Amino acid sequence: MPSPIVNPLREGIANRISPEPCTLVIFGATGDLTHRKLIPALYNLAAEGALPPALTIIGFARREKTSEQFRKELEESTRKFSRTPLNEELWAQFASSIIYHQSPFDQAEGYTTLAKQMDEADHNRGTAGNRLYYLAVAPDQFPVILSHLRESGLSTANPGSWARVIVEKPFGKDLKSAQLLNTLVSEVFPECDTYRIDHYLGKETAQNIMVMRFANSIFESLWDSNHISHVQITAVEPLGVEGRAGYYDTSGAMRDMIQNHLLQLLTLTAMEPPTSLSADAIRDEKVKVLRSLRPLRGDDVFNHVVRAQYTAGLINGQPVPGYREADGVPKDSTTETFVALQVNIDNWRWAGVPFFIRTAKRMPKGGTEIAITFKSVPPVLFNRSGEGLDENVLVIRIQPDEGISLRMSAKMPGSSLRIEPVKMDFHYGTSFGKATPEAYERLLLDAMSGDATLFARRDEVEEAWAFVDGIEEAWKTRSDDLAFHTAGSWGPAEAAELAARHGVTWRRM
Ligand code: BG6
Image (tube, rainbow, N blue to C red; front, top):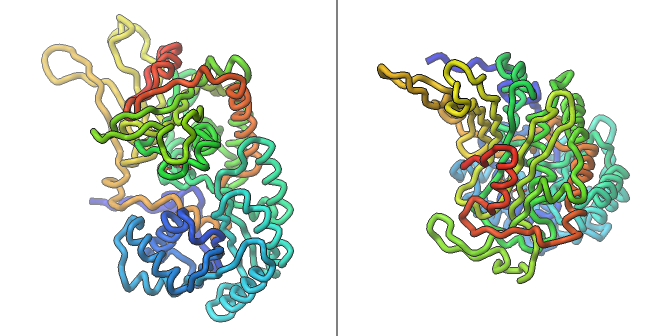
């Protein structure tokens, strides 16, 4: 079998990934993100030999513990969460680069000792004075950490080296708080050294949207309102709030998923071809899509957006409690766990094409996909009644079972003319014969390489908040529009009605 041609694009959007030696400092190193995502991702990169030859990982956190204890805890969580099985020898080698640094975030001394540890790493391990600071903490800790990094001089790299910061979501809770946060970060790190994580951008198939659109000649010429009737972007999961009620109840699905992940997928789907593959050329085009979103405000919100909350139900035959029964959720919470919205992109390419976006917790199944439905063929020849043929649908499956499929009409074998929908299906796993890496693997490598393409730029984040703020403002004026649906169902009737007004049915995943 011929092996796939390998060219640089196949490795992702950027042409070149060359992570440089550095010290990675994780603030909030005892937290969930470090255990579930960051260390397993770094371990898998180490297992593939993809990490820079000199890397030191310093876990900065408040709790008392030794580096030995810290490594042991990380080993346990990596065993549990790593996408590949833990190899003892590889782990031992990888873990030798991890140090624990105990300190409160608000004490200058902790940063002085951090500086010493980093200097030692430069000297003993060749980390070259490069610093990557990962803020894996709640946003209320950002100001204190950032100001200490600045005051201790750690945010400024020596000539020939770099200092970068990775910021985790939630990046603000509205436009105003996001602007404040952006200003705060910009006083310490320039935009070019600021990496705002949106882990959906690191997912392999999300990166493939651009490759599919711009490395093939057949799609782009059809990618507009002349040929596309509507687009559905969905990210749903069977999980509930999973012990994150404190955060989630003040956020809700709109801030948690739409403002970031789903609007990012929308921009990749709808953007114009960028002038180059540079981070800014791509982000320039993405931000134009956000600026072209028709704002939703006042009564319009209730005509275009459905919010709902799940009640007790069954997932995979197992009973699950309703959202209001979850630990830490107020019994009268009106936080939405389901959102469906219909948006318009008011630009030349997309005028008149409705985009539908949906996200929810406690759905029967989990999955993320972008489905592009093309216009029907004219009502002549095979489609005379106007309703006999299914439209072509191109589905980009972000997860699970990453791939792309195209629904077409074909003649069923036999003497009569019967036309049925069939699918052309591409699966990443089978075509490339290897498992897709976790989003955090790609994103950590990119930050070490100085490639910000897959990170959100300041203006993108702010434009997305400006759009979401209009909806949140309208929601504050009433709560009687909050619908309810049983956990394990596909959402409330109101969402189906929203789509039906455009002659559309939500896809079953
Ligand atoms: C996170 C949200 O950003 O994304 C979670 O805070 C959500 O609520 C998660 O569950 C979904 O990510 P994934 O990669 O599992 O689709």
